[in-house]
Length: 328
Image (cartoon, rainbow, N blue to C red; front, side, top):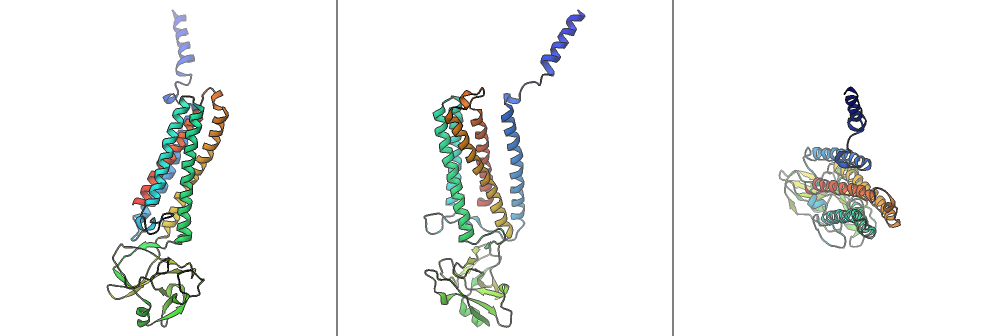
């Protein structure tokens, strides 16, 4: 009897509690490590977005997304958020094609996996191309950098002043040396300095004009109306426009918060790096699938499932980035 009890206890130790137990949700070690990485990465993105939100709502003025992200390739005029909505749509569709690739992997259909992974790669590459265009427009078109934010919103009601208004208020006109730009008359570009003050950057006032060289003197604006300090592609300097507030005081446009450009380029760049990494891994795994490498393995197309988890995570993170930067 005693021998039987000892034998049963020995079996419990060898094959029961001390053999490591069952794998959580029957997941492989590789999948568990992927989940571990994604959770830790999620905390990283969450920290960045929380920091952005904290700074965003602590500022008296902040760039208005509809105004900042209003450009689209091949389209004239303003198309608020149309382009970034297209980018988001492309990324979401690529997540759908990744689901199909995983499904075909479960069926061990090599051709199906390659086809749907190829479409996912096209979607990711398209998103990266769109983001590159957006960055180029922000930097070279609008003059946004990590240390300069020409976008902001007004803190008072006012009216933009003309050159004649500034001359009548005892400001002196100074000609700006310009490079030839089509549609802009070199002789029209001036800045104005109050008589008796030094001719330094912070004392220079400009007449409001856009990137096409069109002037907007006499136009009125209200509190919270967005604006962009023009970067003169002919003058190669920023041109903060002069205006008169309700009290008759002459002021000029103020820079937006530096944090906007810094956080925008860092967070979207960090996410873009994840997308680029995903595209590279997708290409490598697709090549391995096409070569039949995974069909020979015991766990089959598990690698496709793991890259699928990563790709869905990247898409989900973009939804929150889109919400914070483009909608709030």
